[in-house]
Length: 419
Ligand SMILES: [Fe+2]
Image (tube, rainbow, N blue to C red; front, side, top):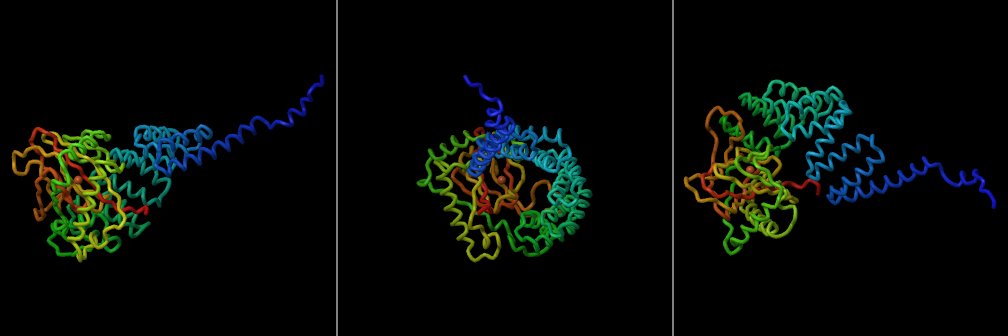
């Protein structure tokens, strides 16, 4: 029996380490391809699975870990996403991207002292990061440290002169300081740069009224004119449809008094109501689309950019609000939307005239006022009533005393910038 020459055997096989490396390279490519495919389809669960496989091959790559946190966030696994962010911060406390990730989560949680501390740390690493300046001034405003917010805004405007978001922070800080004239000068400045910036039809209109000025705004000059009520006819919608909407809503993830929302004594679902286009939400979407056509037709010829430049491609984001007895929503507006709406599906019997009504106002949030020169419109809710209004208009609900839940669906029509 011939003996095998060990040398030959050795030459035919590659070294174990090289083999493993080649396999790793092949596997990594495979996982990256699969990751891209799932990510593009919005399938974040499988994107996470592939990202974790990639990380098992390259456990020390911070960028992959950051990407993984983003996928967990996109998949609504917020706690897991934050855990990854925190772990990364413990091991890489001065990494720019790790800091950015953690600032994002602190702001999301309304932890403004923490977001400020991290943003100031990031400022030491990069003095020209405009979005970081926005995080600093935004956090300072939330912490009611208006003078510091103004200082940082001005510093950042030296780097990028016409940044509308940063000028908008100046508008907010001066408004909180009751320096309405200064704030209004900044509103006019923004209008020259970006006439549809959300601060103009909200705070801009309020400041104009407080100062008794007659300045005309290009985007939306009189928001109260753009509230419309519709009663959905009974033959279009029966009681079953309302019940189906309630059942459908109750299956969605929801929170009691969600932290970053204005709902009190009530549940609010995630904004995923229209994510799947199936009954009953598909039917509701058709009704809404029909009424929006009607709405826009009723304003034909109007010069306000809110109507004239109404986005051709839009997406709808909706959520359900279920208020218990004495429940209400604090004053707010919807900066992300262009046009917003409410559809009432269950309204308890009203004991008092304005019980559970919605109040639109040009004054909102907790902005200070120097007089009562602002407009208000109150609308009583009714089952089957649909209200459309500019997203920038402040609104709140008046607490109701009825026993049953008050259930409504709210939605935003958002300009789809990805198309
Ligand atoms: Fe709202």
